[in-house]
Length: 499
Image (cartoon, rainbow, N blue to C red; front, side, top):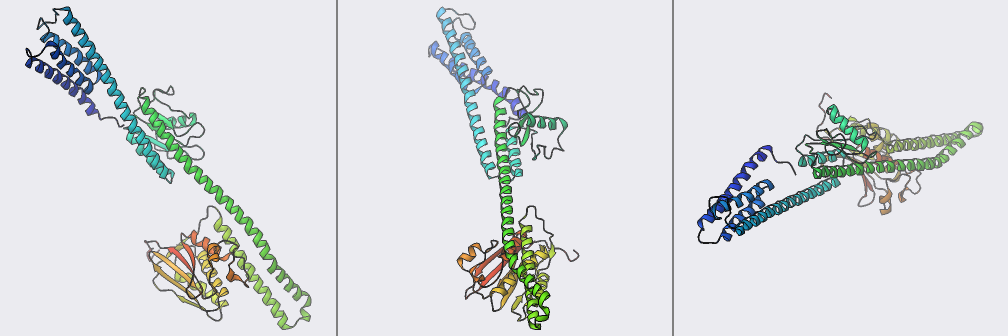
């Protein structure tokens, strides 16, 4: 499919003429060697064999000249009177005329057959080329990959220089700053018209290249500029159009998939927000009612209440207010993490400092000191949002304290290029049904029996882990209890001491 180099094209005529002369000399030498041993008709067959070989090996012009030269040489050397072009008998003249006609017919048919065979082989190579490109495009996961595949495919067909550009959602060319004005105008025009421009197309025939759109009018996703462009080479132009059609389909597939994912994510976000609104509005009623009732009692009947009863009402207000604060914080974080275009405020953070700050807060509500921590020194830094990561660890520890009565282990370690943080308890553990839906919002397992909550904590934890490129998993412990494990990626290039 790639045009032959110019030096090869320059050498071919010399090689063809040398082949023609060698065939004629071989036929003449054979006929002279057998002169007197075979008939005139057999000698003519030797020249006819040379014509057939020339028609098979040479182009139409050389093979035709070989046919005429063979008849002329045979007449001059062997047909009486010899060494003249005169013909002694009418039957010799008829034989020479028939020989010339047969030689020309063989030359013409062989040349046509050779052209058809070459065209069939070319079409087969082009079909295999399109199939290979289609297979590569089927595995492409980004528009840049499609662009790279298309550029390589154009280089396989044309000597170039070729240009392939895509358009954005508004139909503007991407990365066109390096293009000259002529190519930029040609690409834009072929996209606007949705048609091929250039030699042999009746649209801008004076151009030196073909401008092929990727798609149809109004739906083009890019364009290609290919050269050299020969007006009479319709097959090559159609092959370029077929290639651009494959590229357009690949880009459409990627953009359609991206649009579907965005629409699905938006629908899920709206559904999640609606679910949150319904659930939160329900979960807010009970603590608000308790706060209002306790506050009204203190306001209207303080003189009639004993000090113990007043302390109990104040404790109820404080507990319900803390529950509302926790519920609100988890809800807001889940909405934020579920939104599109989330960008975390990530920086190099020490997991030891984050865990230490969390333990200082959580142990204020853990007078029995049930939490046992193992955090080795010298752990690598992680790029994280410290507020979100602290909320994740806090939720895991609060859940472990709430749903178990024994010690709670917090273990941090580094292994296999990851930083792991595990929270283990000896509570009632997880059932298989819990594990299937544990991290979904507003889902509470069997072990939550008797404990109040909205079922948001673990959903928030998973969202925070995923936002940091990590994983949060849960499993049942042998001997009872649960283990929650956070895995965060560790960058190989750690910041220097001065950063």
